[in-house]
Length: 547
Ligand SMILES: *[C@@H]1O[C@H](CO)[C@@H](O)[C@H](O)[C@H]1NC(C)=O
Ligand SMILES: *[C@@H]1O[C@H](CO)[C@@H](O)[C@H](O)[C@H]1NC(C)=O
Ligand SMILES: *[C@@H]1O[C@H](CO)[C@@H](O)[C@H](O)[C@H]1NC(C)=O
Ligand SMILES: *[C@@H]1O[C@H](CO)[C@@H](O)[C@H](O)[C@H]1NC(C)=O
Ligand SMILES: *[C@@H]1O[C@H](CO)[C@@H](O)[C@H](O)[C@H]1NC(C)=O
Ligand SMILES: *[C@@H]1O[C@H](CO)[C@@H](O)[C@H](O)[C@H]1NC(C)=O
Ligand SMILES: *[C@@H]1O[C@H](CO)[C@@H](O)[C@H](O)[C@H]1NC(C)=O
Ligand SMILES: *[C@@H]1O[C@H](CO)[C@@H](O)[C@H](O)[C@H]1NC(C)=O
Ligand SMILES: *[C@@H]1O[C@H](CO)[C@@H](O)[C@H](O)[C@H]1NC(C)=O
Ligand SMILES: *[C@@H]1O[C@H](CO)[C@@H](O)[C@H](O)[C@H]1NC(C)=O
Ligand SMILES: *[C@@H]1O[C@H](CO)[C@@H](O)[C@H](O)[C@H]1NC(C)=O
Ligand SMILES: *[C@@H]1O[C@H](CO)[C@@H](O)[C@H](O)[C@H]1NC(C)=O
Image (tube, rainbow, N blue to C red; front, side, top):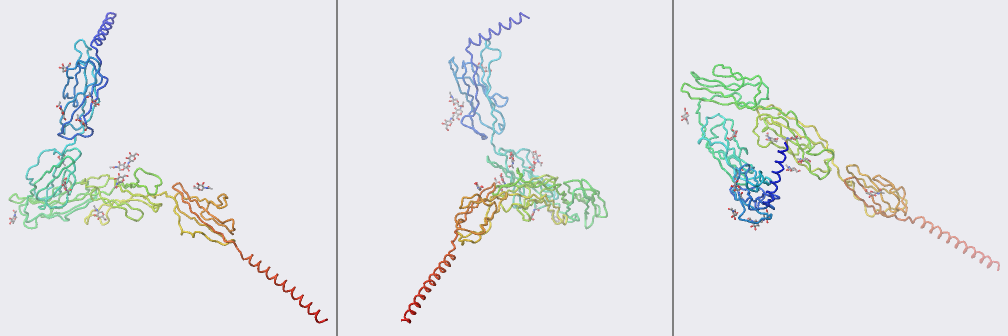
């Protein structure tokens, strides 16, 4: 026990001595980078990986290894450098990126190889790992298809041009009929081919690195049925879980010796002469297309498929405003969302957004050929205005099933959401004269009625510097005096804003009493003067007569 301890101490001491004797200094830090480059790499281009080893000594014992995931890409030693004190050195390695490098981790490792006298575990410092993104043009995945693709009329056809690429590629199709691209998916599906589907199909797969064109040469085999089987009705639209039936008149003419039937994954077929009835008590499949066929004496086959649309109205339609509750603010943008749950087939869906009775927008799902029920969200952006305060928003999901569908197409309506829109006060009513001229003694009404949400408050500033006499929209003075002359300001405010309305009031002084008083005084003076004059005249006359 004691012996073991002594041995341990001795070996530790010898290790430390050796370590120092060699002047060993493991690197402080090891940085991995791509020289002059950030962001995604491009397939086929050359990049220089760099490993910066900081403060290491002795540099001649250094061994730098570059890794791609777990694989060593290259091992580098410094160029003859006899420097014993710590140095910082950069090591580089050139690589050419390939699409297989997308997502791999690059890194490097610096190791001091100190020989048999060195520590048993040579000092190693590892850089951080850098995950590479490599952009590359689309490449097909999957096997090649036969050329031409020979397919009998009435059969389903799938053309698959699945491809990988970075960024994720987009797909578009050119079809023989010169119709616009029927799909932006990698797989083009035709439920039942006809001779019109004969010809050349091109799938264009592209991303910003390049484009790949895949051509499919489709030969629809004409069964040349002069006496073709016929389904009545020729198309079915059935609610999932409902019963349904159709009959196939196999051959109108001689059916002698023909082998015929209706083939379907569910339901019963009953023959009655050259007619086959197909019935299902409960249609529980989402994708079904019964085949009515016959094979004549020569082995020639003739068939027709019955296309069936299996539908299911949505379980629920939820209306909401994305990431928002409570009142809206005038002028802000909001995203309305209509979440339609469990509807099939989604391609027949039509979603309408309403504002009260008005249609705001009608949306269809993006090319989605899924036949089983799906849940999909539809969104519409609006900018709220004060006129939207109090209106009802809602949405509606409708399945448009065509003339074979139910008379009343299935419609599910969301609940209605009453919008509250906050907006700053807006005056209502006509402008007032400026100035407002009013004779003294008259009543005066100043009206600054306004609407706003929340309901605005009013305060008034008077010429007299008195405190606001009213918190109503109308200020009333029963009888104006000259003291009421001046500027009135009505402040209408809510938490959305403030609006100030100014009224310039000029009170006209009333002069009538003064004029009347002046006239009265004048009349009195005249009367007095006249009285005095008369008196004097008579006294004079009397004096004359006495003399
Ligand atoms: C890095 O880019 C700079 C400027 O673009 C250039 O001067 C320098 O030579 C480049 N270094 C390498 C190693 O390519
Ligand atoms: C090593 O590379 C770094 C950048 O990663 C640079 O700043 C430094 O100057 C380089 N040192 C030498 C000695 O080349
Ligand atoms: C790596 O590539 C650069 C140019 O990108 C070149 O200057 C350098 O010599 C190459 N290094 C090696 C080791 O091939
Ligand atoms: C670097 O590592 C390799 C392989 O492990 C080895 O052969 C070589 O001797 C080492 N270089 C030094 C300087 O120790
Ligand atoms: C299309 O081909 C790819 C690759 O072979 C395959 O993974 C995918 O399942 C195919 N899609 C269909 C619908 O057949
Ligand atoms: C299909 O993609 C190709 C290549 O990106 C483009 O030239 C062509 O206009 C596209 N066609 C349609 C119908 O989008
Ligand atoms: C189809 O049948 C008709 C009459 O039976 C015949 O005249 C015609 O050539 C046939 N067409 C093909 C493409 O076999
Ligand atoms: C909703 O809000 C969350 C968190 O605030 C955010 O991460 C998300 O992107 C928002 N969604 C939309 C559609 O704006
Ligand atoms: C649809 O919206 C709801 C929230 O209303 C969210 O929980 C769900 O993940 C969304 N579904 C899809 C497919 O975007
Ligand atoms: C709706 O607005 C959001 C941002 O609020 C934006 O990301 C989105 O593209 C807009 N949608 C439409 C259909 O304009
Ligand atoms: C959606 O409704 C509009 C107008 O009613 C109609 O023109 C359109 O064909 C409908 N879309 C589908 C997929 O039925
Ligand atoms: C009147 O309202 C304005 C704006 O809200 C405010 O600045 C002012 O102090 C108010 N005056 C009185 C007397 O309340």
